[in-house]
Amino acid sequence: MTAPSLQARFETAEPFAASPSAEPVKITASPFRWPDHRTLPRRPWVWGRWLLRSTVSAIVAPGGVGKSSFVASMLLSLASGRQEMLGKTVWDGPKRVWYWNLEDSLDELEMQLVAASMFHRVGQDACGDRIFLDSGPEGSELRIAIEDRDGFQIAVPVVEALVAELIERKIDVLVVDPFVSSHGVSENDNGAIDAVVKTWTSVAKRANCSIVLVHHTKKLGGEKVTAEASRGAVALIAAARVTLVLNRMDKEEAQKFGISEDRERRRLFTVQDDKANRAPAEDAQWFRLASQDVENSTGPEDPFGQEGDSVGVVTRWCPPDAFEGITVDHLRRVQAAVSAGEFKAHHSASDWVGNAVADALGLDVKNDRGRILKLLGTWEANDALRVEERRDQNRQMKKFMVVGKPADQVSATPAIGVASHTVAVSQESATLHPAPFRGAGVAGAARDAGQVSHFTAGNPALGPLDRTPRDSNQWEPKANGMILAPGETGEDVIPGWDN
Image (cartoon, rainbow, N blue to C red):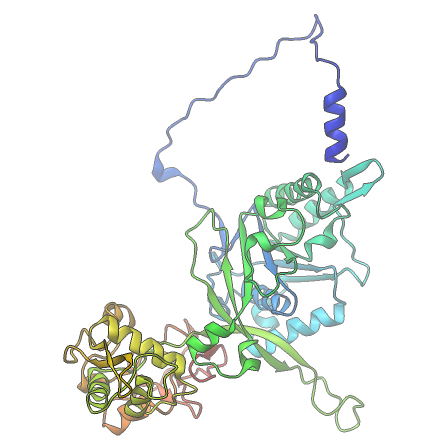
């Protein structure tokens, strides 16, 4: 039954009159019981603050961003209990997960999971029997609602069978991809979609599991994805407790992070809860779509080549910190260079002050443009550098960058840098951030000055990985400029400035 037909019946209905013999209706308001706050039950989170038992979460993204690869890595993280894979806590141990994909073949789904397993080094020994996989094209269809000339109705037998299987298998997380294929009603009918989503919520509550519905966006014309950008009726987003949106890095963000190659930019995307009505909204988290050879070539005689199939795999990506490795001494070098010349403040000028910064710190003014802009913006805010408007040699008013207050511990880094970033603030302690860094430039300048180039603390960007005990707790540089702990390969986190 559709919304218009319901409205028509309502308008033509006869006034309701209670039967003389009918029992009178009584409604009673329930007093608030004022429970002890210490006895209130905890919200049963499953994965970070993104998946919650007895609720529905939605993943909304356009095609080609990497949502299927993201789901594959998410499932492995849940089944293995390894939170460092994607940086999300797997609460209360490994989970039993069921991935029901209604678009892709079983071969393709298995390849995605195997590729993620190889890349993250998480195998059957870590996941046990906790992963279940079904494919719509292989015959495992799933439709919890249908629609005909008389309107829509919920497929109760399908729902009951699904609930029974979820309980029997003790499934913690069910992922349905895509949502539109899990029902047969018009996706633009708010009334019908509301009934479908509420049915999914009922399933989640009865089976005490978290259900994730993967959904496509409408055509965006280059705009960023939001919860409201989901295709069809808004009822899905209204009923979902968490709505994760995926957005590919745009050109402005790429410039900010110093990523010059468009191919690399298109590999990077954010995942953010655009709804967050049961937990504080989190900042967007960055991920990278890497490639994994699944090594399925049969050898020299393989008609498809000796290299195996390459499959997309999602891993974390750490946005670069412009002040990684910056010390008071570095700012003094920049101030000396600015004082010795005439440099304009605007980045479009041929004599831009960024050139002086690049020369002083050993950076590349083209590839490190975003980093240089960040440095200049902070130093101007801290009054280490100032913008002065005066006439140039052609008697035109221009903005020049000049030296402000002498460099000190406060002006060298952001005001919160020392406390929150552990940035070195003196020449004697030029330890870089505990995060991957560029092998040349500032890091090279620090080493050339005889400063420390190792860490004695953990790397928060890499998360809690298994460590191999060694005689020293110093971190070792790799050829690509990354600083890794003993036993770490760096493949779980892709550094920012190195891309």
